[in-house]
Image (cartoon, rainbow, N blue to C red; front, side, top):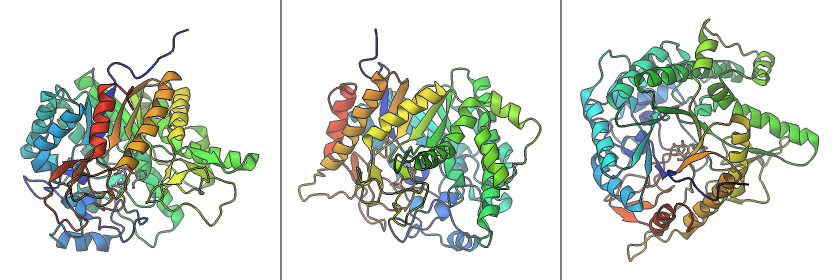
Length: 484
Ligand code: P53
């Protein structure tokens, strides 16, 4: 009997970034301030901050017109270096480049009726540059940001009318780029909507109780689900060839022991993570979530058509980020691993990155099989990589063998999953060029094949330097994943 022997012919090898982590140029060509640009750099490696935590901190940020404390304002200046950077991606043989569009370049305040032409022109230039090298753009419509004004005036996604603002944005970009972009995804890591910080959902009163906050988060999330489903429909009407996907931060949960109470606890945590794709791929809220909402006094306010909209706006493919796995027990212990956003116990069988993320290549094979079994839609690994401190040697080299080891192990497992029969579209590793960390806004947490000479305070020439992993990835792409 036939089974696939390796990666498909058109496999989309490449890398992934986000506007607020690479572009810089935060205040040029009419761009408005985004929620990402008011996030101060973290105090420590485990102090993950994806959005401003209070109204006070936002006010302080608005007054501060510098980039010093707000690294996502400066990125690595991709805005002015995109030609050189894309040429380097092409040199590695990239087939795809995942990037995001900064909403506030197109609608600076989010509420305008007409888009900002200068912002649209910038992405035209980027897409044209990619086309020169036959690199397929894969566009995240909203990656951990929105125009700040929408959170100040409307409290972000908590306010239903933001759906209209979003659809005005997607209408403009779908039409403008319909012949340049085929692959889209609506929200980066949509499950981040319910994490500690409010990612683009508006700031909350810090006095609010945990359950009041949860209520708001799930309501905001519901609006994102509706917006995403409507965008899928809207996009297909503009160009039926569009492939529009969902994007989940996937973290498979393993039971702490074989005791069924632990197995069930892990299953519960897993369902809480998969629920987002149950909605976006299958088109309805699963009953285990309806039960969870009822038992936690969470009431999702829906308009009469919402369920129909969600059903009709299911995605064409499922994409996800994969960095680590988690361990769950029925009883929480004190030594939960620090780096993991989804709370978890340490796994004694795994190594941990310098930021506390547990490295688990086999978990990627498990994840791919599980997602394929459950959803039977094409899958796309759109983020995976190792954040590490790199050393630029005197001779100008960066010997990042640890990164090669990490990526090789993950690509090997991904290949096993393909042989298991998983329909996998591609692999865009996270941060092919060093960029500002999402969680801690550090520069020194590096993921790239390309080193950028810039430190945590923004000092440096921003010169681009090929690391050892650059040559390795080139070989991997050239051999379609055979020469690892
Ligand atoms: P950084 C936590 C857990 C999993 C994925 O993250 C995460 C985070 C956020 O810290 O975010 C994704 O830069 C995200 C990217 C981000 C990347 O993972 O904190 O989609 O924007 O840069 C890595 O090391």
